[in-house]
Amino acid sequence: MPDVAQITVAPERAAQLTRLIRATGTETRTTVSPLSGADVATIPVSTDQDVLDAFAAARVAQLTWARTSLRRRKKALLRLHDLVLKHQDELLDLVQLESGKARAHAFDEVLHTALTGRYYGRRLARILGPHRRGGVYPVLTSVRQHQRPKGVVGLITPWNYPLSMALVDGLAAVAAGNAVVHKPDSQAPLTALAIIELMYRAGFPKDLWQVVSGAGSVIGSAIIANADYICFTGSTATGKRIAAQCSERLIGCSLELGGKNPMIVLPGADVEKAVEGTVTAAFSSAGQLCVSIERIYVHESIYARYRDALAERLSHLAFGANADWEVEMGTLVSPAQLATIEKHVADALDHGATLVSGGRARPDIAPWFHEPTVLEDVPPAALCFAEETFGPLVSLYPYRSVGEAVQAANSTVYGLNASVWGPTRRARKVAERLRAGTVNVNEGFAATFGSIGAPMGGMKESGTGRRQGAEGLLRFTETQSIGVQRLMPVSGPAFLSRRTFRSLLTVGLGLLRRLTTRA
Ligand code: NAD
Image (tube, rainbow, N blue to C red; front, side, top):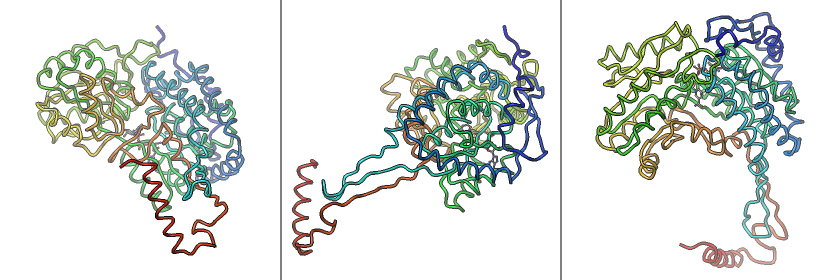
């Protein structure tokens, strides 16, 4: 079995990748792998001037790129799809090295990235148009809707999905004709750099995607001060700060933020399947996934059976901090993440919660590993009742009526993702009552997340805007309508008086409405 010693990056390769960062100063920082606690690489830190230079270069590149044919952009997107699959071994190593997740979960990122390239490659022309729109008068007015790129998009990404979160939003931005100035998270820059290197090889011009590095609180403001649009993925607290800064400049932003995602298990659900689904929904990437399930509402008729089956399943979950494909849960990314889950567990127990499974840190597996943990009897006063843990911690709640479960599921400030288990028709009806941007029936998150055609994003404090689908591309564009008037002005021909024209038009519109639409 491959072990932790086999997941490394050669110093020369790390140095080659870090040269892609625009950084001229002398400051550096060292990244640490959660697999072992060992140093990974020395990363140069960008100065404010580097950020300005990145924007200047990106602006020049964008002007040319915006004029390139959609055919050429399509070719680059599809080539990227192929390159990601071809070079997946290095990408998988880097994702694991920098995030600590299991190899199978790292592969989810490879898939998500490749599929996004394919989706936009195939749909670009259809989504961007131009599209014909009806004019005031048929034939006489012709209107076309065009989608113009915003310009230079500031992209700020988190560490938890260091490959796909680094790429998929920015990929839509460049597909739409923009340039990108990107600040990957300081924890996982090499993964981001490796995929950006593949973008250049796929045919995207080098200056089109600029990378800067440093603390978000320091260079984040310089990015927002210079961008034409901001695309941010991260916590709700940071998202609110970014939204305030964007509003001062009147630039748009899409914010993909946190969640406290609920699952409802209906009476009549297949308990074994729901338990298996819970393992994936709550513990993939050690629960450090924005769409991860953290609250589970189970009908009282099956509650005890579900709880005991979940505890039994977790008692033999395969843990590990290595490259074994059969590992079912990897480690947390940092001491800070471990501290949060330990705090949430201790606080819940102090408030009278009961431990169903897990509950301990396991430094014998990796320095910041924490067991998948299940609690019940969690009272509203406990931190983990409504606050995002962003770790492998779920709370179980029995319910009597479906209305009660729906109300509880909708009761937090978040609205990112939800899951419903049960007979399909019934579960779909319940799904429609949930206030979440994505709802998965008999799945945790992958049914919607894996559908690149389906928009994904948050309601309420889980964000604004959507990634994926047409919306994921259109957010990076300005809509421009160009109307061409032929033969006579919209106000009517010169030989008719305004009064006569008004009467004719009123009769015409009445007829048209009856001919084209039924009441
Ligand atoms: P975070 O908000 O601390 O950091 C995210 C990114 O923002 C990092 O690159 C960071 O350097 C940067 N940043 C921090 N302060 C900034 C500032 N003032 N200005 C500009 N940039 C700044 O979040 P995190 O802890 O790295 O990520 C975990 C959070 O992200 C969780 O809440 C999770 O739910 C959320 N998330 C959401 C999605 C989604 O699609 N909705 C996906 C992944 C993660």
